Length: 140
Image 1 (cartoon, rainbow, N blue to C red):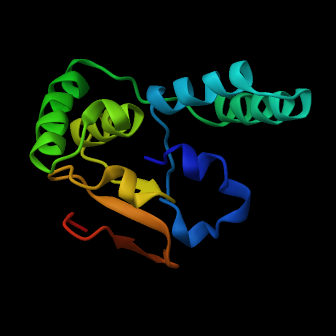
Image 2 (cartoon, rainbow, N blue to C red):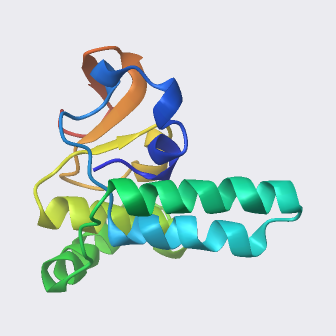
């Protein structure tokens, strides 16, 4: 699973930093859908709309389904145990739940967004090319 930080920088990332078959979640599509609606300028709105349309053309998002909902309970509990507020990282928590439910790693440019989530494999796309670095405390 690639998160929004990766979707927005796909053109700038080496292919070896990405999964062989990148996929996004419905949550990432929701995040991208907000962008054009909250843009402050016409240029920013156009750029965000282009990212949204490109993602819609390139990916069939994984749904947030019943298994993801159950996994979200575990994600929220592990975030609370780690002293983090699940609501403050709602998108990341929902993406993490979808990843756990589908037994997939999350590739991100912002690994700290996923810190404190037990059992989640997080790969930093800015890590060593071809050998994405796991976040400390997460399984690789």
